[in-house]
Amino acid sequence: MSRHKLLVANRGEIACRIIRAARTLDLPTVAVHSEVDATLPHVEMADEAVCIGPARASESYLVGERLLDAARSTGATLIHPGYGFLSENPAFAALCRQARIAFVGPSAELIRLMGDKHQARVAAQEAGVPVLPGSGKLPSDPGAIVKAGESVGYPLLVKASAGGGGIGMRIVAGPDDLVDAVGRTSELAGKAFGDGSVYLERYVAQARHVEIQVFGFGDGRAVHLFERDCSLQRRHQKVVEEAPAPGLRDELRQRMARAAVALASACRYEGAGTIEFLLDAEKEEFFFLEMNTRIQVEHPVTEMITGIDLVAAQIRLAMEESLGPGMEQDSIARNGHSIEARVYAENPAKNFIPSPGKLASLDVPAAEHVRFETGYRAGNAVTHFYDPMVMKVCAWGASRRQAIERLDSALADVHIEGVGHNIAYLRSVLAHEGFAAGHVYTRFLTDHHQALLAASSAHHG
Image (cartoon, rainbow, N blue to C red; front, side):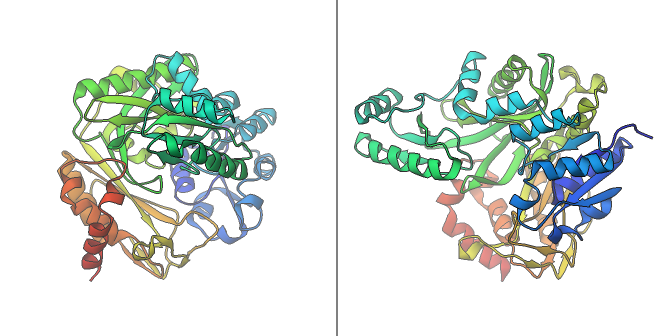
């Protein structure tokens, strides 16, 4: 029996995913749950479970001390944070280290470095990674702000230094609107993050969002597991993700991968991480956006084209086990194409408003080369306390076209009752001729909004 025990500091589908990985390593697991999550599958799957407080995340999943108390009381030696919640919280990573419990992820210092967008940008530049033309943190003087705008070039983005999820981000077309936009973003950032500092960055209109999955060994060595295209987004939230990115020349893929590995190596990164790039596909230029110091929601598409269990690799590294020859760059090969769609309890026709409720039925038929990742089953409630994602559906194919067809038929076979959902909308995205041709970019869903909604209501009917 393992001398280790893993506490999963998360809920839902990612908690189930981590527990499955732990089982492959014969590692006993501890689930945590809020009062409303007591009957979710991750609680039943784990060897032990601890209630950590009321429904609100701010009183349960976001309270580091409660998670550590649960770890101490059960004798857990490792904590896996999943994604979201405290996964990129340097203070929590530091608390784990003080408690002599291994945090499955990089050090608190690295999380802090990459969490500060401006510092991360400097680190990228030092590693020779291209960054978008931009400014440092802006002074309050209007003249200096206008001057900074001139040097960056228009159109540009005003961004919050401490920000995330696109909060407060503004596109500015010319100098007349700049000072006002900076003031508004600063005010919003101050309220949202307690830090009103902002900076400017060049805006690329037909941009793609392409990210590289990296894995660092903590000693200056790192490898990449190819790229994912996550351009299909709504309100800066990814909706459909795929690997590899469609329509790129191999030389460009290799340049992006080399840049990502250079950055991960330079900062002696440890574990699974993702380096996000903004790609100007026409010019074949890419620019560093940010680094996510955790496992990503869309990691299954990378696992399906490489055959590597990223979560198990994270855990083994945290236990200081050798990862073997399979994690050497020469051994990591790409096979076929994989695509993932996120199924949400929401109403696309009403501006994607969340649609919480009890899942009267949730039928997921097994299919070859398809992964269904969910943290619910029939009878569970999707509550308004957490993100309304019900499941991720991932399909693999020898070609992109085959992967899309498999994903579409898998989505068609999912049966959900009791909550509104976006399956018809997702299928209309997959059927769109622009998507089928691989013409993806970050404004795709916005630009085709009406057509996709009309097609999804036809699907529904």
